[in-house]
Amino acid sequence: MTTTLSTDGRRLAYAWRDPLGRAGLATRGALYIVLGILAIQFARGEVGGEQVNQTGAFETVAQQPFGKVLLILMVLGLVALTVWRLIQAFVGDPVEGDEAKDRAKFVGKAIIYGVLTGTAIKVTIDAWSAGPDQTAAQNAGDQQQQQTTSTLFDLPAGRLIVVAIGLVLIGVALYHAWHHAVQASFMKRIAPPSEAAGTAIEGLGRFGYAARSVVFLISGIFFVVAAVQYDPNESRGLSGSLQELAAHSWGRIVLWATALGLFCFGLFCLAESRYRRHS
Image (cartoon, rainbow, N blue to C red):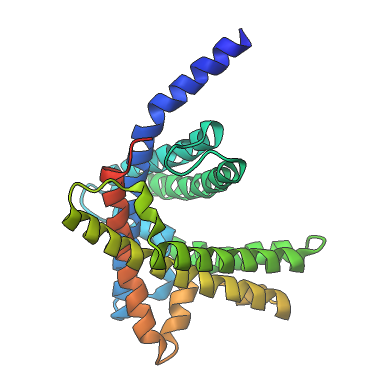
């Protein structure tokens, strides 16, 4: 009986893995496109840097025509993304691997997307009840991250935990920079319809992963600095990282490149949703 249930569960997971993945990737693409637009507007001085985060992106969607309906679709897409990663953790994936380290990575991503789904649900509820809170993006950006860092400091070995988080972010940045921005390893997941399309998708992916590497690197460095100085206010997220770039004359170029890169990563995610190898 147990074997039959397990077999049926795996068959169901295999059947849903591909459509859930494509829906989730399309949603992630839409989210990064909005983030990229917000980052570009920040680089042009049209919006505040505190708005360039996931909550700010959801609120931007809510303010568009049919925005509330679009928010619901994004929530459903993020749920699909979370469930897809959980299924990968359960049965593995022929595209991204099925070893223990791969499954652990899928669990980590499922947790991240689960938290992001919770943020989207909150903004959606606010939009349908009394309209989106215009200050929510500010409160949910670096302030929330700083509060989390402060809470970690209160734990036993809290400073070491914060350092570890910073080092993990730096490691992720270096991994993405080498394996994706340089080696374009992500193309193993793609089955482009033509050579020209493959070249375009590769370019978007390289640029997009490079931009994400910059954000992860800066955020990781600030986590380490926060631990060394024992000051949670030193930690930074996406918005804080971009604001830090804007504060330096040399950083304006990197800021523009990162903003455009985030937009390109969104386009890459949409392309992956369409042309990803079947899993």
